[in-house]
Amino acid sequence: MVNTKVTLSGLMMDNPIIPASGTFGFGREFAEYYDINILGSICTKGTTESARFGNPTPRVAECTAGMINSVGLQNPGIDEVISFELPQLAKIYSKPVIANISGFSVEEFVTCCQKIDSAPNVGIIEVNISCPNVRHGGMAFGTSAESAAEVTKAVKAVTTKPIYMKLSPNVTSIKEIAAACESAGADGISLINTLLGMRIDIGRRKPIIANKMGGFSGKAIFPIALRMVYEAAQTVNIPVIGMGGIETAEDVIEMMMAGATAVQVGAANLVNPYACKNIIEDLPEVMERLKIKNINDIIGIVK
Amino acid sequence: MTSKMPLLQITASRRIAKDVYETVLTGDTGAITRPGQFVQIRIPGFYLRRPISVCDVAGDKLIIIYKILGKGTAALAKLPVGESVELLSGLGNGFMVDDVYEKPLIVGGGVGTPPLFGLAKKIIEKGFTPDVVLGFASKDDVFYEEEFRTLGLDVYVTTNDGSYGTQGFVTDKMKDLDYDYVFTCGPMPMLKAVHGVSTDGQFSFEERMGCGFGACMCCTCESKYGPKRICKDGPILFREEIVW
Image 1 (tube, helix red, strand yellow):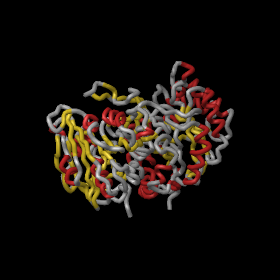
Image 2 (image 1 turned 120 degrees about the vertical axis):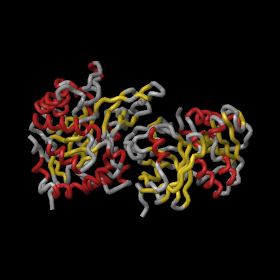
Image 3 (image 1 turned 30 degrees about the horizontal axis):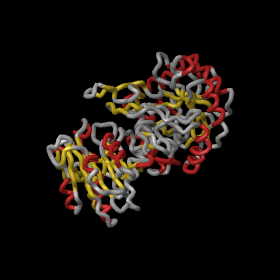
Image 4 (image 1 turned 180 degrees about the vertical axis):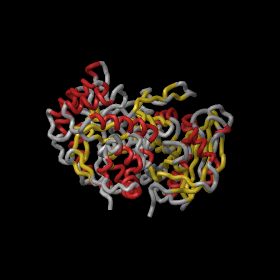
């Protein structure tokens, strides 16, 4: 018997597999396919202060081994998530979840984190700093060390739960941003969010996505994600959740060897609703084959 | 036990109109419970599945009709008989036929026509005889006119260029017909026009999809009752809830 249990800032998980925010809703759709209680945890759909319809359609474009999405943070708003979505999720998933929070101003992050802090089934708050800062010219919070640290400090001041900052890969130095979040008090970091991408319909001579650009995810981005997780894990001493293009148990092992304590699976869920289930079932076998008795032994083993 | 992600074998495939193919898939069809639902087909070499409406189901036979609109559907049309494909099956809400009105009318436009065939059979089972209006761009695009007629229904075909049937749009033909409820599927401008001339009914929508089962929120549209995911809360919307 191999050990797949890992711990993220006190959150004990049966395995390191977490469906990523925005690819799993609040679990309902996947509960129609399998018992989602097998999951290590669940990262819930990104939530903002008010309800958002999101961007116009088309919101999705296919790419080689991946996809671009521009959903635009469609969500029912923080109050509805706390009063309805999280209690509903608790009925079909008995373990603590990771609540993903988004904001377009520091105040919005603060309000959302403050409110969700008391939700009983939230174990960790993941703060998505890839959205534009509307107060400061629309530059994403996560693209400057200063604003990433500002958000981190502000939300830490109003919460009791571990705060994981979710980093954007669309930056010059991921090490600098990761270090800034750690210094500002983050309990962990998760990366990578999607890479900014674009496709054009050459027949119509127009972008496929209504919003022109979107977030590129899927198998194709795995090597980039792995490199950034490695760089971040080399820089900080807080836990790292690694994600980006993970599809198999082997990918999980690779991401953990690069320094991730747990992983999130994103786009793979959308093309195969059983993706996380398959990975969880395959993981012990792959570990045995690689002579890994305890999965914690390989975290960051590649120096 | 019924699988929601079954492997089905291609047992027949033929071209039935310009760029339009009818393919018979054989295997577990148990997840499909209503006409108007769709399947997401995994096509080798493509990241996203392709959502294709269900035309008809008979036992272990599933009939799909699709038009080649891009590389994915072109690859699907090239898959040989004998090959198996993996589906996410029984997706979407489907048409509600529990309380069909006295004089139902079926209105199809182009490749929006297929799901209306299985629907017609269900409406007939309920003891009603819907008239059928099918609109196509041109003579080469027309398909399934005879199949609907074989069900014993009156079928009216319109073409935009007048090369076959009545020249004009489906709504031109609808003026001549007596109906109190429409079931329709077709391109957005047609749905909008049908919405304008009808008072009650069910409309099947199309949108570029990611997952097809309600997780990614890529196909959301506005409705009178808030945002709806075309893949999960649709693809069928009631006339009264539609917001253009």
